[in-house]
Image (cartoon, rainbow, N blue to C red; front, side, top):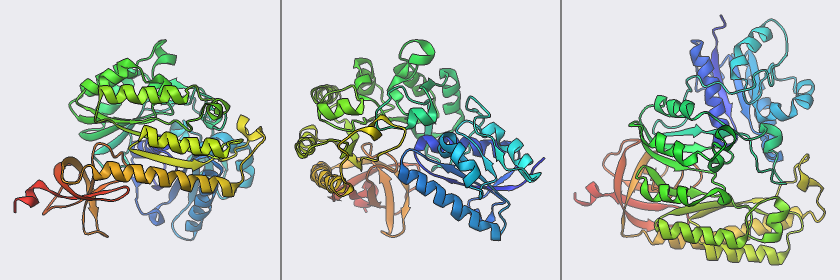
Length: 442
């Protein structure tokens, strides 16, 4: 049996991270060592993203950089994930630096492919396996924050997006499998539910939406302290989910709702189902039911034919909706998507300018929101130490891991994964600063 030291570089989203953790689980199950220092790896896996052209470039660069470790201990280079899943026909003959290629569900094929590679073969094992393997994962996040991927693929077919071409149609994972996986993750302060569209969970598998039912079952697990919801499509947020947000103490009062635009003509061109008016009505319902709720979203700037007036209308929408936080991205023209063929493509310089302008609008909104907490005390989970600032760093409920701001705080001691009461003394555009209650009494 193959016994090697394995390392991994995992790129892209948190959903891809879970796939990488399944690969690491296969390695652990085979009794092989996993090293954090990739210069010590004999087998290096580059787990790739292919969502945007920039992500594909990053993936290729990571493979080429990984190949440079062959001057040391590296023997085999494995490329896994979205890039080979979508582009294996072009990759296999051209990317000769790689010894093995795996798709998004091919973790169980890893060792057989490696055995063949050690016998002298370059191996294309993409789509060897049709379904994901639910063996024990090796968690790559901090121990107190873990992700649970509840489905794969997408049913929305937005005109700018490659995900259905990469990941296929929407496929919910069985509820009992997910509950058992959540239980197996051990004590978890924050479990983050992810999928391309979490709110559609169960429709394909059970014939009806089971997202709230899944949340209820996971909430009953003693090892799960809090649950955060990402990637909730606006048209799928109904009264049942709003009631669960209001009444479930384990559910973080936070929703990530990808909107992509506010103007109806652009939304229709994007293949989105909602309208500006429906979005604003949804936010009003959410805030009426859960007054403290934090709302986060993402927008695409410079979609084909977007006028200056529609850009300004999106800026005004930000001022009206008043999101806790937003991400803005210049439209990326992706081959094999319907939007690629649209006339009226926006110059890169204009897209860049519009992204900058919208970040400026949101910065003012976020700054005002954060300043409202100065002088107040918040519950903050400690994520560790920021050595550059010489203080601890953590997050309040309105800050999701890695995508929102942080709370930097002083304390005589703090433990990763523990929750502290922090009095906020200062705010900037994205972050808060404070001191623990214990320090105030000293």
